[in-house]
Amino acid sequence: MSDRYAAHIAFMRPALGSPNLGPVLIIVVLMELVFVLAPVFVGAMLPDSWLLLYEAGVTPLGVLAQLLTFGLIAAALVWMVRKFHTRGFWSMVGPLDATIRNLKIVGLAVFVLLVVQTILPPWIMFADLVETRPLLGWAVWIIPAIAALLIQTGTEELYFRGYLQQQCAALSDKPWVWMGIPSVLFGAGHYLNGFGPADGVLYAAWATLLGLACADLTARTGNIGAAIGLHLSNNLFAFMIVAEAGVPSSGLALFLYPPTDHSQFDYGLHTLTEPWIVPEIMTLTLMIGVMWLAARVALRR
Image (cartoon, rainbow, N blue to C red):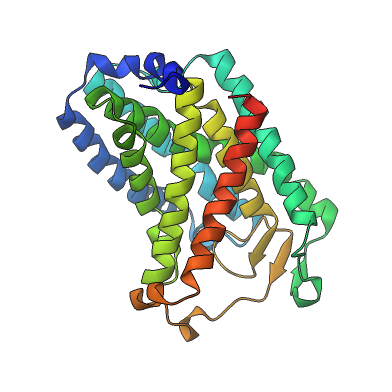
């Protein structure tokens, strides 16, 4: 393992107590079920009027409820890791002080970067907006949104960069294994966020790149704080700045564009061979690369 990943040796050490592949595969399968069933479970507990808000996510409370559902997923992960590996929550996090410090440093650095990108061209096309929410009414949701997004992104980082990265590193010292496999699984979980096969592939590719950036930061620092900070700031902007009106999880966005009828577009896999795909992939890579670089500069690693 290279010197730049020296901190990763201590981070993955808790996984050496149970380095077997079998329990990992069981937890991966069970976690896929938990990711799918947790919203179903929450929905079954809600009255019909609240269920519609929860599933649609077009109001602030609806989006917050969706994000808070990840708390159940985190609890399930911690239970499984304790059951199959006899280790607990903090073993997947890293040293607490360093984790909090790196979360703050990277979260702030990436946040400032995204603010600068937002005010630089290409600007938001205000003339095309269907709605701009009242600024004060939108701002009161910032703190609750940060708290809920911390649970959502923290859960994903705990699983992919904490548990899976550690266990893969216990199985192999090759970075393409312990960085690549969790990142590909993270990306694959985002495939259904697209509007068709081609859009899903692009979404999965973007998420895989984000996963690789977070995996690298985790290995450089020996904790998941930096990964959470990057992920949190990215999602904060994704949820709270611009969205299409009426689409799922748009309830916290400040600026709303008219909804797009995606059925009029062809998102078949064959479109991935068209010329526009090259600049699209370059843009996705640049977006992740700039955030990753900002995080590294802030961490001085």
